[in-house]
Length: 304
Image (cartoon, rainbow, N blue to C red):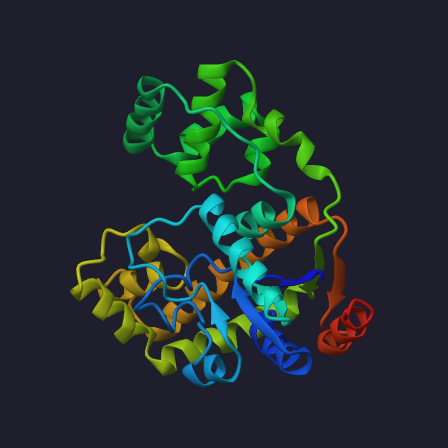
């Protein structure tokens, strides 16, 4: 029995589609969202509501406290175990989310990467702290262009990983992942997409709704709980709201505009990643097709 994967950029409507599909085919949802795993972070992560989670069982939501880590490898291990359990109960597993590295690990697998020498790793830690990620990113583009294409210039963690590995091992980190392009037949993968203008309007309305629901208050409470230094509060939506609370963004209108623009840039990066990693997926233009109908029809041919 193939597990179903529904992915797509932020604001593409994955949650609602997955819930309706789960009702139709006796399914349970496995979240593949790297922010929804965290407790106390509900509005800014667009977490499914309590009512939605009562209607359809969800997994891998609210399993960590902010500041705790959860790697792609840990996600893969946990998700595979949950999928096995769901299928053992004669139900359908529906993996839903937009975190590309999680889904890539689940669908395409992970290669074993040797640990890097601690002295080299600490060397790049110091440089990143002193000069910033953009400085290191220029180095990465020179020595491992393929790995640089997969990471953001602001993602110091993955930039350091690529540089450290090259200096220690003498080969690009990206060279280890060449075997990940093999076709995986264990999943039916669907990717939702649309035009930039469509996403801009949808993201703007979504952001306005988040602010109305209490994004500012939620972020303030997270700061009061002592989570201000967590990487999770540097995620889009929370980072801008922290800036608003600390006076660097002056008005709610400016806050909404900043979150919208930054989210739209993130959507572009998500789509680029999905195109590079999920070559056998069924892409659904949500402006022209009804995704629930498309997915339901495709899944019906794989029902037991």
